[in-house]
Length: 88
Image (spheres, helix red, strand yellow):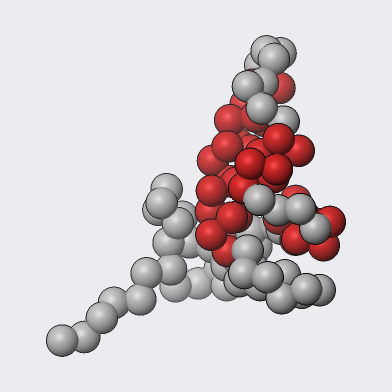
């Protein structure tokens, strides 16, 4: 039986995420997948002029990312797969 590789996030968009923190080596990929939809909800509330339910700091605290190096990896990640590989 051959397994298919699933390179898509839950929304269906392809993306490359950092698997580990470059500084300390902690696995952060699952935290990024949980962070992204919550951060999108935060951004949507801010652009609509509403008070967001939670801030990025609260989201990262809830996900258990205490070290600033791991927080930096999550906050500064930009999905560039479509720009890096425009052809399928």
